[in-house]
Image (cartoon, rainbow, N blue to C red):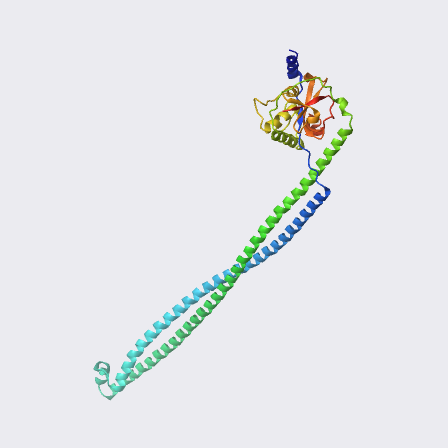
Length: 400
């Protein structure tokens, strides 16, 4: 009956407080380890900077080769256009020469035949008929004069033919020469373009390789920096733990512990060692994140003492109905009591106004070495502190 009243009183009067995360002792890196990490980070930074400089030079060379390749491409295209024009000019000149040659040849054949028939008198009757039908010497002389004119015209036509032929040949030769020169120029430009393109491709391969090297070095630099930072943070936290533990060792805190009145809790536990470690890690993370204390809160943005205990073990895998949100007093009843000498990280610590279960007002998570993680108050928030730093410590811990 008395036990029932105690529990009921605890449910009504127990104040919800924030809990502190418990965790195993933080490793303490040596100054030599940190110095070695700094040197490793500096070496990686030097290598990364050197690779960056090499990569910048390679990129500049690549840009130069790209410009040369583009210029070669433009020159090649201009040469192709000029070659096309030269081919058209050459073709037109050849066609013109052919037509002129054919026309003059035809005229030359006709006139030659007439002249031959007229002077040799060995042609057909049709050709010499004008001579045979002359009316006397004067008429014949007139007709011979006409043939002489025809012969003169024939010479003129022949001269024109020869001149046209010379012009046509000259035009064709010029066009052919231009075509040959353009072909040579085009081949040279194409060769230059190929050299530039090949150089550009080779340089691009090299740049890609250098980029991969630099990316790898930057990742290694980031990793080295993280190692160095982690070692420094671990050492600082370890030094803090040592200082607090040393303070606990010389603090007359035992007089703040209530005498053991024989209160009993659960006879069994529900958590494993792995779950206790997870719960401690969760609580530690919330404290290091400087989450605020808010009465009645159980995360994830703020906590009170019992709210942090509940959230920490819930994150470790415990759930309803085996694990539920209680106040500090009820958690003392719902855990198995252990002696201080048997405390392990993850066990719960309780604080009372007068040494009774009903007056328990605060709960924390043991961190080892006499330290604890707790959600202390609105003014202090979530902190890492000495287990004897609060008056009214109950003479037992609670294992979940």
